[in-house]
Amino acid sequence: MSNSTFRSNCGLATGLDIIGDKWSLLIVRDLMSGKRTFTEMRLSKEGVATNILADRLKNLSNHEVISFYHAADNRKTKYYFLTEKGLELYTIQLEVMRWAYKFYPEQATNDTDFLEQLSQNTTQKVFKKHTKNYQNEKDAHFHQMNPDG
Image 1: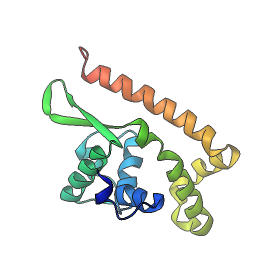
Image 2: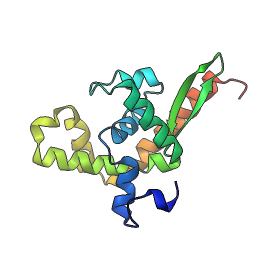
Image 3: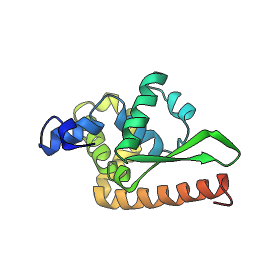
Image 4: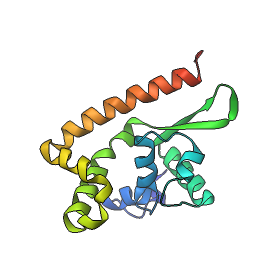
C-alpha cells in the first residue's frame, strides 16, 4: 500500500488503517488460536459475514500480516497463517485484553485464566512462548498438508 492510500503519516492512524476495523484483530486472534481455514474463521462466535471475512483476509494478506498456502490435495482450500508481522500483533491483543478485563471484567470471563497467567509474567515473555508454539504448530501443519513441500 502506498503512502497516498493512508489517511496520514501518523503511526496510530496508519496502524488503524490496516487493523483498526471491527474484525481484523479477531481474525488474528482466531489464527493465533489454531483456526486455519475460511470456514473455521467464519464459524467464530462473533459471526462475521462471509463477504467481510473475505475482504479482511485479502486486506491482511495485502499488508503481509497473514499469508496462506493451498492444500496439496485440494487447491481450492487455503490454509491461512500469521506472518512475522502478524505475530507482532499478539502483544497488542494482550494489552487490549488486559484493558478490557480491568474495566469490563464481566465481559472477559473467557480469558480469566489466561489473564491471571499474564499478570504473573511480562507481555514479552508470554509473547515469546506463545509465538514459538504457534510457529511450531504452523510448520507441523504445513508439512502435514504438503508433505512434498
